[in-house]
Image (cartoon, rainbow, N blue to C red; front, side, top):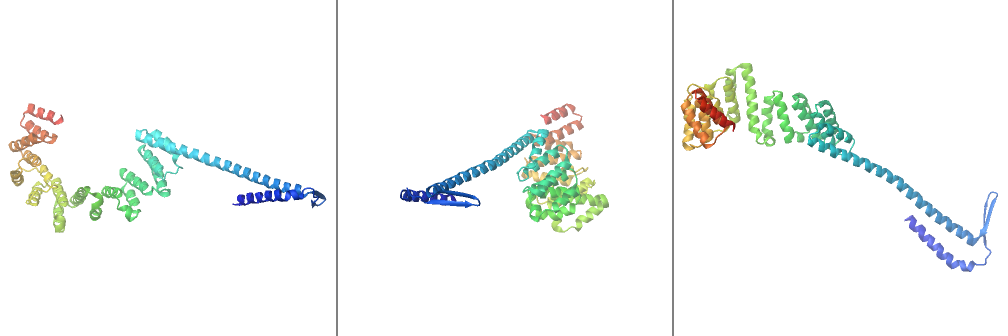
Length: 387
């Protein structure tokens, strides 16, 4: 705006000079300037031209100064852009080297990005590279820096917890998890690590208390963890107090808990581990009297009883309505083989193999043939199982 005003004033001065100038030709008017002992005397016309020249010189100098300032400021921007491009290139080369499996080169390039503006993702990557090189302490420092100074703080804490779990340091992992906000603690990534850390610490009761609110984040793994938590708790009771105390504890549980298939499977598994196969069979048959339970059915295969007739009768009853059920045939084969009834075992397994060959069924048939000293057939079945 000031430049425009000055230009307008200059134009006005020129116009005035053009109008007034001719009338002043021949006039002897003068301008006297006295400064101390110095005196300057000039005509009015000359004075006007001097003022005009001074204005023009001032405008030219102003333009030169601004131009020089822009050039100097632009050099800083240019140098900054060059440095930024170098850091970006180092980040790209580091990430590429990591996915190529070259950890040494990845570490070299990513170490040049620590002061770059990547919202902490470069520190996450550098920490991961360090961890995979066995430099756990340096990895933790990089992740902690990302957790403190970047927008990738949650991801950095996940990396820290994951490394603690991997190193079987559950207490350190739990300390980090407990420092997170309630919202962050409900995320799937943390829930999975939280339950692993609790399992490593042997805190099965804590897992069982938290499982109901973790049902959503755990998804399909919920039933697996429910069974594993119950099994861990039952194993602890059995190891400390014995099988009788375990059975007493089971009967003291609420009925709703005892009806949970995951808890039932864990209890039966512990009975089997304690060698109480008769009690295990009793519960397997009783709890499936109304139909098959997916969590319980596989446990029949571990039964080792001289006369498992209740289990055999139940499975044969199911086969009457679904005679080509390969899983039932395989389970019956296991039960019969474990009690020495090779005729029934071979009959069930041969039908299962005919319907759907598998390594499990072929090897079980090979064991039966080997037990019958039919080594040629056993060898043929073993070969078939690995093809």
